[in-house]
Length: 235
Image (cartoon, rainbow, N blue to C red; front, side):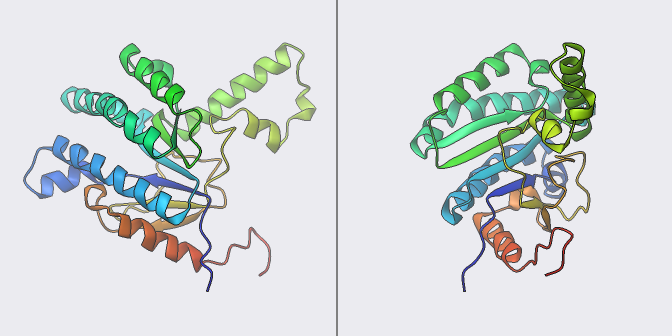
C-alpha cells in the first residue's frame, strides 16, 4: 500500500519547561533538550520525503516569560543558527523564518539573514522557524499591507479575495500545512498559522517535546496516511 506523505508538516513544540520540571531540572534544560528533538524532526522529514517543515519556536505571547528564561531562549536560538549552518548546507536544507522578525535583537536578525542567505539554493527541505510569531499578528500585518496597497491605488477593495490575502501573509511562498503535530497532549493551536491550518490534519502526541524522536514523526505521518481528506466534500 502506498503511504501518502504530507508535503508540509507544521509542529507546535510544546512541553519543554513542564518536562524539565517533572525531571527535577531547571526549565531551561527542557529547551536545551528540545534542540535535539528539532534534529529528530528534520531527520524524519528528510527520510519520509516531506518537503516543508515549519516549527513554532517562539510566539509573540512568549515574551511574558521570566527574563532569565527569555535570555536563554535567545542565546539558544543564536547558537542554533550559528552551529547548525554547515549541517543545513550539507543536508541541502533551506532555512526560512516568519514572524515579526524586526523585533528581535540586531544580533539574531543578522545571524538569521546570514543563515537564510547561505542556504538559499538548498532544495531538499525548507525549514521554516516561526519566531516572534502569532497568527492574529500575521493577519493584522497582512491587512495593513493590503490597506496600504489600496491607499496607493495599486489594488481595488473589491479585488480582495483569498489569493490576495494569501499573497500578503508571511507564508506567501509556502504551501499550507497538510499536517499539524502538537506534543505534550494539549488540544489547541495556540495562535499558530490560523489561516494556513484551515484544512490541516491534526495529530496530538502525549510526549513532551524533549522526548520527541524521529519515530514519533514517522508515526504521525503514518496516521496522516490513514486520514480521508474531503475538504468539505464527500469521499
